[in-house]
Image (cartoon, rainbow, N blue to C red; front, side, top):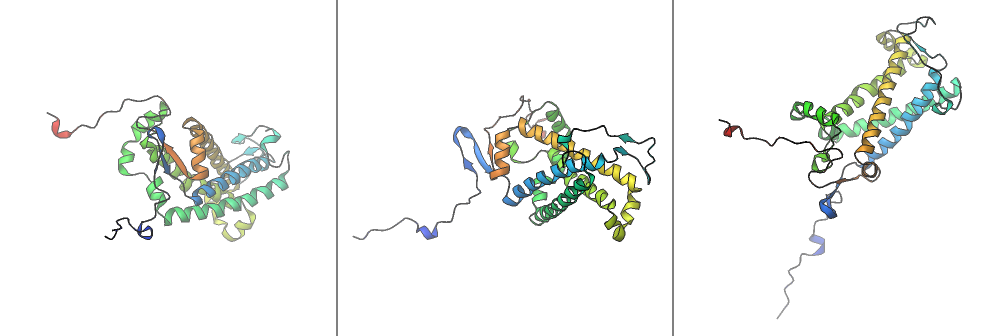
Length: 273
C-alpha cells in the first residue's frame, strides 16, 4: 500500500502577509499602521520643524516687532515679542547670521522631505484612505467635538482610523498651514524675490509676509502642543511604538483613554410608528 500525501507542498502555501493583524492576549490586536516612509518623514519633520522654530525665534528677536504692510516704522507695531530665554534659541544667544544659516538649511530639509511625503501620499492614495474625511464622517463632526471636549478617546476598534477632527486637522496642516509657512518664507527671501517677486505683492508687503510667517509658525506650535498632549493622553508607549515600528495595539471593545460616553444604538427607521 502506498502512502497518500495530503499535505499541501510548502512551495504552494501562500506567504503570510507580514502586515496582517496579529492577535494578542487579552482580546487585543496588533495592527500595522505606519509604513516606513511615513515614519521616517515624520521624524525628519520633527527635527526640521524644531530647528526652524528655534532658529526662527532667534531671527525674530533681531527686531522683535511685527507690522502689516510694506515697512516697519518702529512705531505702533501690531505685536511685540518679549525677550526669550536662550535655551529656546538656536544657536544659544542672539546670533542673527548663524540663526539664518540654520533656518535656511533646515528649511530645505523640511521642503524636500515634505515633497516626498506628499508625492507618496497622493500616489499611494494614502491621503484618501487615511486623512481625507468622508461625507458620513463630516456629518458626525458635532458628536466628535463633544467627545473631544470630554476627553473621550476610544482605543478599541474605533482607533483603527483617525476621527473626523483628526482628519480635518491633519488635512489643514498639510494643505494650508505648512504651505503658508513655506510661501511666506519664500516671499521674504531676496534671492527668490529676484525671480518671483510677485509673491511679496500677494502677501501685501514684506512686513505682512513676516507677520503671516509668524502666525503660521504659531499655529504649528499650537498643533504640536495639542498633538503631543493627545499622544500622551491616549497612550504614549503605544503611539510612540507605532511611529517607530509601524505597529499599533487595538484594545478590546469598549476600551477608552477617557471616560466612557453612552452611545445611542442605531435604530431601524421602519420601526418608527
